Amino acid sequence: MKLFLKIIFREWYNLLKNKNYRAFFRLALVYTTFNKRYRSMNLRVLGYRLLIADSLSFIWQFKEIFVDEFYCFESNTDRPIIYDCGSNIGLSCLYFKKIYPLARIKAFEADPKICDILKTNLSQNFIKGVEVFDKAVWINDATLFFESEGADGGSLINSQSNNRIEVQAIRLRTLLEKEEHVNMLKMDIEGAETAVIEDCRDLLDKIDNLFIEYHSYTSNEQELEKILMILRENNFRYYLQAANNRKIPLINTDKEKNMDFQANIFAYQRERKVNLERKTKPSKNKNTLELLDSVN
Image (tube, one colour):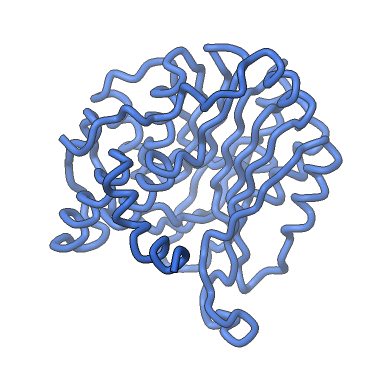
């Protein structure tokens, strides 16, 4: 009976307890019921003025970032260095600046149109301390083909459609070599993550926290184990969370789809995490966004 009640009332509990979840609920109701996909629009939420490229992708980005707080991390400084690879329209940058206002952020976005929206959202919300690179993160500096999806699904790896455009790429390793320390590396680069992590494997000891969105395209070999092995080599402790849900997965293999598996990888340097916890009380992270207002 207890389990039954928990299942039935979970969503109502979230609505009552979590202000940000209520904001997500209202956004989902208002901006996906009557709006077509891939149509840019302006809106206000959590005190931010935002230009968005696609209502559906925005809704789920908002939930991951501001409700589930995928990118929340602890730092031993109030001026952390953050690399945001795949910044999209800038919600991740806004979140990082909310929890660490003095953070220094390098933001990378390959899609030119989406990058323009990113710059607009940073500017109209008066966000400082973010260096924007309108380039794809890759294993060398080059000109590459990029598939522009128009929202959050653009890809270097799967660039076979008629929407291909040429973009400039930048080697992440070159930038990391210049850093003594990086507090957070967030990587959502739609399939290029394995190659980039491999290219930077001997520099990952500079990084405290990692978020990697792993993509398994049906046209390519699966490479999740390569990323996990590199994390182990660098003394990271990791947690995996499936980002897509396949019912009866041994039957429904999704072989007809573009992507058959997607996972979020959360990783941290275990020794630095222990040392940080020793210096602070084991209380709830005061940087979480419990006090964010609902939709304005």
